[in-house]
Image (tube, rainbow, N blue to C red; front, side, top):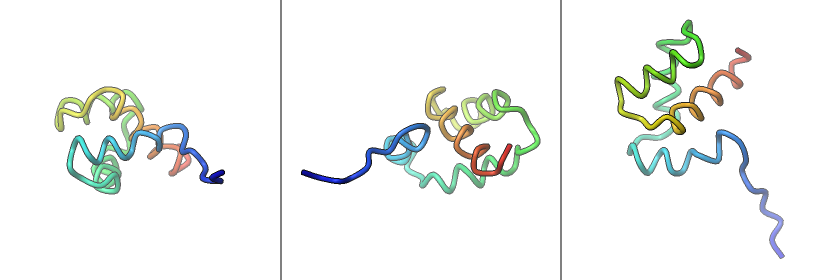
Length: 71
């Protein structure tokens, strides 16, 4: 029996984000730093428009980034 903890929430998308967009999630967090002053959905729209990231992946990145920075 394994004791590995299953990753939940936005971070559960990270492996597929890295595979689909060929960049580590830390790259996307740095990109999001440049639009930190924008609202959640504005940041999602930015990733979708500028980088062609799918809605679910963009939303997961923004949610995690905002939670990490206490926004």
